[in-house]
Image (tube, rainbow, N blue to C red; front, side, top):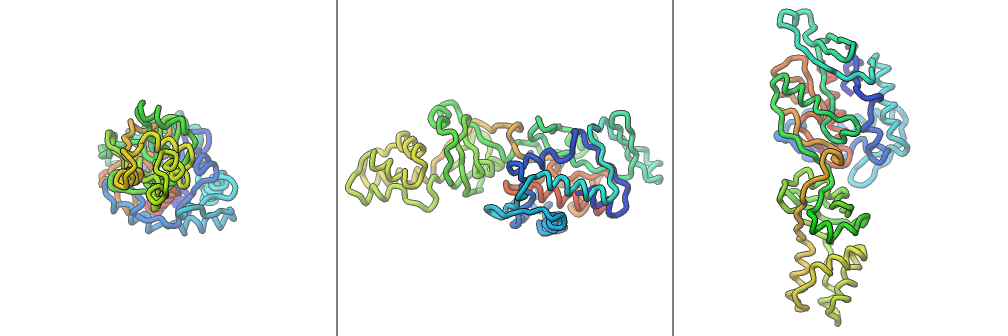
Length: 378
């Protein structure tokens, strides 16, 4: 996006891509259909040490702007839950669209070319407008502006590296400590034995941690918990603390037993099965049987089902994380241009910056918006 906008402004632009093709993360996103934006995108959908930083870029380039680009290229798309927009066909259409826009803007894209070093010329050379010397393989490039759009540490098998953070440190920039985000949570050995044979079973829950609450599906895996609600809350979860799960938002699980004629385990499981998948209902009741069959005991069980605390052992790490939280400190950058305050001509955009979106197209929108702002400024 940055290259496209800079090219439209008649800047000479070259994109250096260390992978064999561009857009590999785009191609695998959204189950191969690319959740390319979210119509409800707001600054509140992002995590950053400075929650105000994203406001300017997100206002400069909105979801409607990217939708207009998608429609210009006649790419069919649809809206799923919570404002998420996906291609009807393949994510390849988004990659092809960006490649076409680059070509029309005169942008060169060089693949299989990893950057080795970036050197800033002496101050005397700045007057010639060539402060950056970039060495990549046998190639050397000299330019007035250098934009870092390297992504984070997530999914290393796709080629993710620490290059962007290393380069920021090279230039003396602060880094907010990074961590996996939008990532499945792993359970301890005891809880794994209790629940992980329920792999594949999902239920709509309220997941809460760090003062945040998300109501979406939770999925049991062979190592722990996943699904949209868990991925969302993982970005806020702190190690060694519990997450709180409401297994039946807005429902009264024990009412059929409290109001019925039978008060036993079979009746309780039957009541839970009306709301939860059968195997989950049976397992949870077996593991959390009430201390008696009084109304008080049933009300306490009801409270427990809506405030079930479980402490993850950790996350599944960068290998399974959709994004990386933390990154280049926003205090080092201009929110209007994404340019470094300390190093004129050096820009950081996208996931490498300490701005992390919620699940549902927000991180792509941040990439488009921050890239647009840099492209308008270089």
